Image (cartoon, rainbow, N blue to C red; front, top):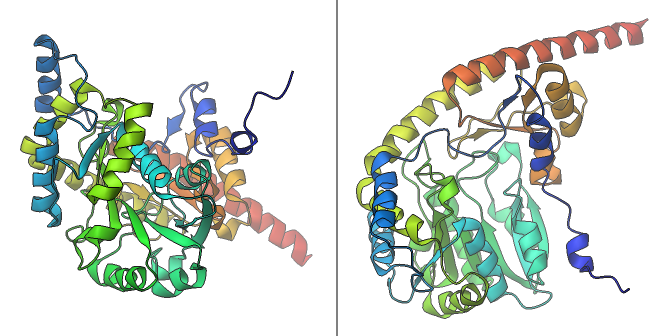
Length: 398
């Protein structure tokens, strides 16, 4: 019998995030600080709208691109929060999470061999989705000295005649880095000069802690070059509702819609009705969650620095990205020992790209009480490592 499998798929590595959580699920008294999922319940008015839609028997397919009322609210939101205008009839597509929108955009825009510029550390799906869309991923390694921002110099280093798409993953998972207007203006200039397109993944746009989020699509000349991707999972604590969206120029959006029609049909109807309430009435909920995250963020950064760990201060998302380079261990070794010895799960930085080596992703989408218990265990582990390191140094001196 011939091989039933695609070599391209077989060669894709599994997600580096998942293996630790398979182990955690089998452990008693383990604490996970790795999952990128809000610990808040979906606000009641959003759940209530979903329940009401079920009670009314609204369990039919929607149009392929999504409910008209939802697309109108998405456009209202983008105008209100991001200062960018889209036509709900032809420039908005409701998807099954933001991840589907990323996949659709890449498949709709790439020809075999086209290069996709991917800043890392970043979300684990960009590289495999590029490969599955017949593109060639080109990694741009971001550095802590630049606050993990994409600089013009780093972008220009990687551009070739085959470069077509730049992915902008800000606010960033896993580093918590953001790009401010002046940063984006420098990138936009290069994008125009080199005739690139942008996929801007803004799923964490409401979770910024140093001013209002700016989308590159709002800058002059960029709307027609940008696929703006967002969703409801992070901002409204709706991860399991599986709902996202893309806003893009009509010529790109319509090709994305074509793939969506054949592969998915439409996003979940109940989730779409609930999302209308999220956008119409959810600003206060988002603000309350953002305040809670910011409090945890400050606490976590302070606690890690007190332990002697170098910790970049994140201004977006809900992760910190401390360095563990001083221990001379790989990220995977550190995370594995921490899980085995103290029953705390974090994600090795290498899950988000090779340049994540020497770092860990720790999520603060958990209650302060859980964070305090976990940090006590991490502190104990770090102290033990320092004693081990001190002992080795003494033996070397002898």
